[in-house]
Image (cartoon, rainbow, N blue to C red; front, side, top):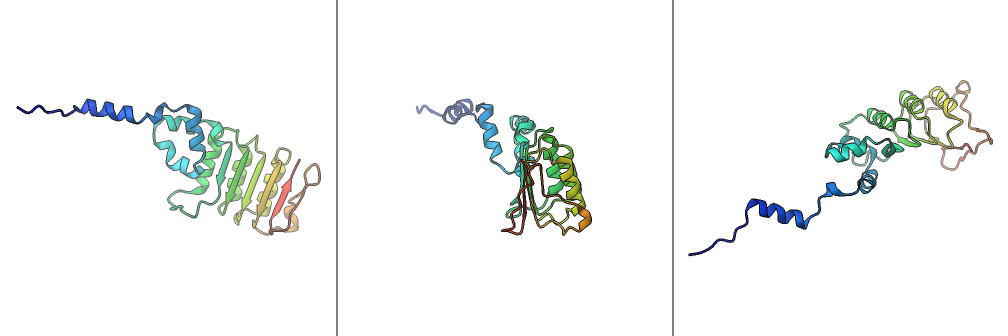
Length: 187
């Protein structure tokens, strides 16, 4: 008579659990660090949907102190509205946003939303945002000039004299012309 040594399903699961640690038991700080390495759009469209633990981490305003919405077009499938995703990230920051970078899709409305909902904003970078007008940029700069320490932009719409975009802060500011962009350092 032959005796079978087959494991039960419970034994198999127990073996798997012993071989591989449960990633949900990782320390909160480690999971946060891992998630912060993803792009903002990836967090909003995918990562926060993985499990309850990741969703909880993604709701933490500290996750949203830096919003980088640049270099999305290399592999972006276009199923999501980048303006909406950026506004969602700004809202998730609950005023804790300190650094935001946008490339190719900024508008006056988005810029207004960022400035209005980001009382701790220190750095603003706008690249190739052709739908931001001079007057929209001027209003945003005037609203947050005291708190912004680093403002960079290039290739927004051409300004006329009535736009009154000031490149100086309390120390007169600095402007770099090397790369056809404007750089302002308000200290």
